[in-house]
Image (cartoon, rainbow, N blue to C red; front, side, top):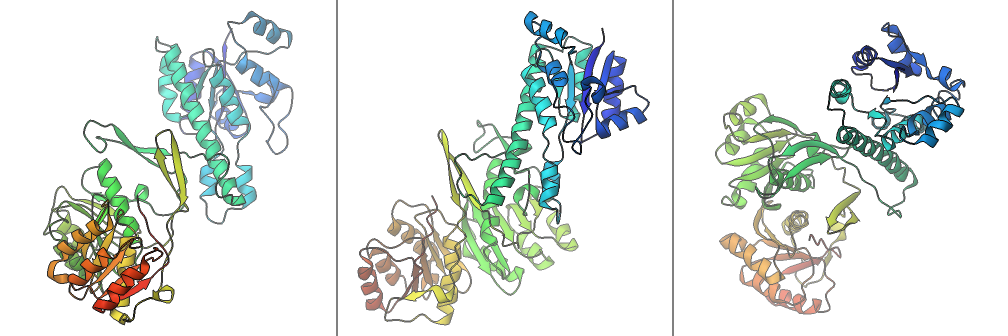
Length: 510
């Protein structure tokens, strides 16, 4: 008695070769719809599913394989005599192999101007049902959903590699595939209903690549991406030069991208260990990078640089003078690329970092769970600022404070950023107390702090940070306000002629 294979695929890559291979191995082939036509047109004998079910395809193809003659053939256990007896009583013939891949839901969602109805019609029902039935009964049914597995399945059928472990591996792949498929559908409907934090939250990612290691050489790691890419991300960047990114490269580059996207004017950001060591803006990207470099010419060594304008020759010449791990920009001029590619180890990434589209949610894993929160997209303009001191800030100080405010948002808390003339000059990151962060930033700035501004990601619980700022020559401070001891800081500002403004917004970054 010949074995039966059921084939129904949307992605027809190599399906004819697979069908021929099955016929050569003695399989009867069942199929439906477009797959049936493709196989028949290739001259391969194929049986329509409706001949097996005795029921026509109907409802625009929505119902064709949802039938006991199909699912009985998939779910019946060959080792269970009661199952075999019932199958014989009802004329159900076993199906020994299933090759199914699903309606292109992901591809449909990503189309331009696609209608809601088109998206709904590309939700596969019969396909996942067959896959799940076959995968549940994997001991008796070979199940394949990935065209890249066709060759090894054919090889396994005629060799000793068709083992329990092999079949279970294929079944596991199926359940991952259907889980991912259902997650994409669930998240599409979540976007339609605009439920912010539902009772369950499902995510799915597709592997981009295995990484050499994680944060440290003894840690394994891999890079995954969202399957539906609705905005430019690091996962969609085009690498123009250099070796593969490492785990830490990816973390740092993503941080640089998020920072540079804050600015509409030409901006350059240098990042080390996920904190900015230099940020500069200017009339040109060359000027912006020059400012970012001189913000901290020591820490930028071995860092990551993100630019929100095409890299021109002048900028490339500056970039080429120092050791950098990565440069990411919307594009690179031809001559600029020639200059930079002379450096063997630098990675050059092309990515649109000018988009102001922000992530809606940020997911952070914790031991045994996850935290989900809205992306920190809160913006502050000059109109939002409340001056709380006798001293009024100048227009230049306001511009520098707003610049510093965008920067401090991306510095690990407790965070202090000093800025002057469209350039960060001191960054204090990740300290256990605010005065510690301020002292680091002030020390880094040195003499540059005279006439500079200071941004704090959160309020001052005591006036010590303001006192340190006054001693270093700081002329204006931007901070959220909201401490019970706000007046103490205001009094120190008034004493030293410092302007202070409140944003009434904090930017903790843990």
